[in-house]
Length: 187
Ligand code: AMP
Ligand code: MG
Image (cartoon, rainbow, N blue to C red; front, side):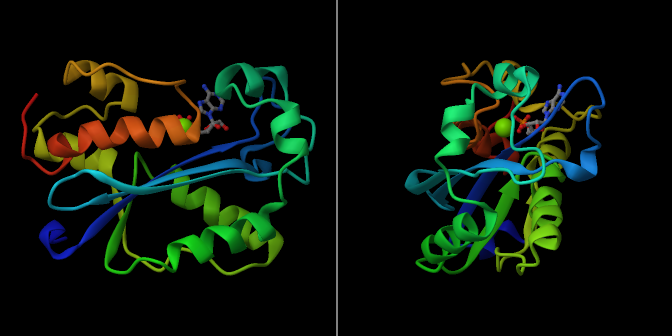
């Protein structure tokens, strides 16, 4: 993929319901937060951001494990829109921009959109190609291992700001890794 052909990189990190006791399967995980930052592909500086919590429908009560992992509380999701309404708001925001590449750390975030869209019977909302920036980071930096976002920050000696596993904080931390992802800087 020719990364130079895009005007913006749209970095998205989503959080979802989860457990550590198999109380529901991964194909029943539901999105509870979208964190998105839009950066200029030239300067890699942030131009805009979008953040929403989402109320899950199938497993509306968050597990303690999920709240501890993400720092997202029951109160946060109880007052949030359900997925179709949140997606509608997200799409209105996305409509302000063209010629962007959807970037996420791994394939998971894209797959979670596909899963929630199928469940709620709404179209997939992001009209852009997708780049797995976890894979791209390893490729550009010539490391065989696939590093988690926190591990990649450590390798690059960059501090993690905010709360790890909060979508908007994860997305903002990924901005700092983009010079390494696109090969402008080396670890
Ligand atoms: P992340 O972007 O790494 O914050 O993770 C996205 C989502 O994946 C989280 O909101 C959880 O639903 C799930 N997840 C991440 N790490 C774990 C884990 N260690 N155990 C179970 N689910 C996880
Ligand atoms: Mg995250």
